[in-house]
Length: 112
Image (tube, rainbow, N blue to C red; front, top):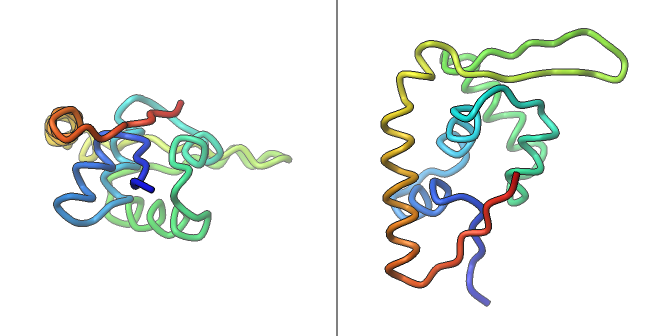
């Protein structure tokens, strides 16, 4: 069975190496997302891996985590100014991934 992709950026990064950090950034490039929204958009990532990558991106100053300190938890993630500076790179990866998928007949199953 062929590998399934859920975002052209995921496909592009799978081809060139690395995976989840650029995919998280690509989703946050679209706007603010809660943890659960990111999980739904990235069905191939484990909760542990997503949590680790979000923490790394926050430590690197690319995303902001805003905890509204409510019950149930309401945590939102957004790009910082530095993270937003990656928008052209992420768009280029997205475009290249979409074009390569089309050339190779690979299906992209975007979620969200």
